[in-house]
Length: 255
Image (cartoon, rainbow, N blue to C red; front, top):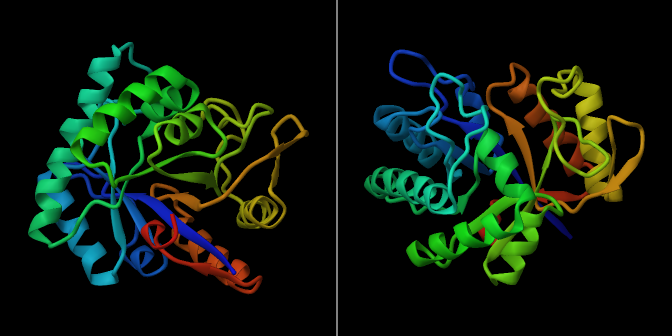
């Protein structure tokens, strides 16, 4: 029996700017990565999003990004190990306070954008952040790019860890996500997205943008909430994989 989590980055609005995702998405996903105020999100949106998760029985995760509202957290920043860890702790604390008012506990941590890409590749930085976050919550699940240095660091630190794969992003020959600046990096064709997910989940490999194949492990599938096709992708992924015997459950129930 195969259990898999389906996650989405949500709550990514700010002030009068609405979040991108459709509310119906919460009835399809099992875990939500909630923006915590640095790259996007604010106290009111975080509160509203926690409420949606509660209503749909979706587990919540913190989605810390770089302090870069103008760049939506997708621009690189030169930060120290201590700064990077403090960015995580600060945003975790903000979401935790609001989540508690909804009687919710944060299930997992997943970094955002350029912060995510930087940490996934850097073993020592990953290790430092994990050690610091463990001091806050040693039962937190760390969600990161499948087979990355971050996953290796999590295993070394003996924390709960989940391998994440992406339905709507292309991969390179090293198993990293292709830069959004490169054509084809974001997958908008549903058939292509579903085929990619099926190959990774059922056969453990993905076809890269260069044409080679890379091995990947899967605990959770990500669909970006700001993808206009997010709801359609999520519903179709569930339909197809459930037909293959996959059971969708939140991470905390099997990691």
